Length: 253
Image (cartoon, rainbow, N blue to C red; front, side, top):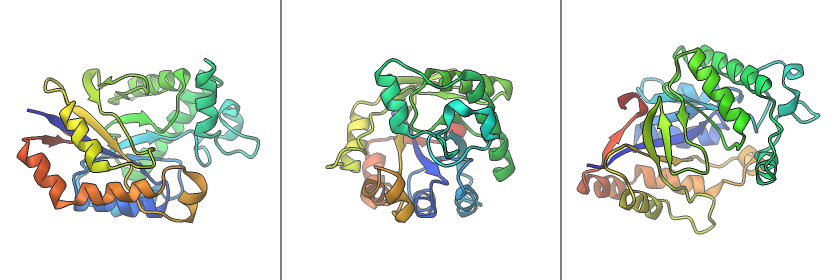
């Protein structure tokens, strides 16, 4: 039997994204969602999910908005205006084999976001990982904070098709959402075709609607709306059921 965790990232990115994610939880296939604790719209997104029982994880964000920690404690993560360096800056450094993130500073900010997550939700994160950043020191920082608080770290680096969740293996499904001709249903079909049967398969998606803030700050815009539609569609649900795909949350693994 194929087991699949369908995860929606970016709760808190903006209110439009929050509404899209909430729809995929209430009417669709999403059982796990990632909260961006530092974002101003995080509380709004969490409020929309009240009573759903969805597994909430910490989607640690160090490439958008302002930090939860004191800015003077984490200079390597910030631009001159006090906001986080962009994901493009991280990608460019990664391509050069560089890592500008200072480990102690990463730990400080990750810890601050963890405290903010608990304050917002009243819960411990159901899983623990990071948003759109390539940095070995960030990954090390996540592991340190996860161990400190006995959290289940979802270790899925961008260069591997097998990761770990709380020390247990998971398969990482390929994402196609940045492609201009993206077809999310076909991407899900391909993920099922390539899925492993011995371990759960994690399908990461970014459903949402679009507003002015998203258009200004993200390269992933209209494809988010396609994912909302696909994840809520009767056709998708029937297709997965016909193939005996079991949907899990992180809480169930």
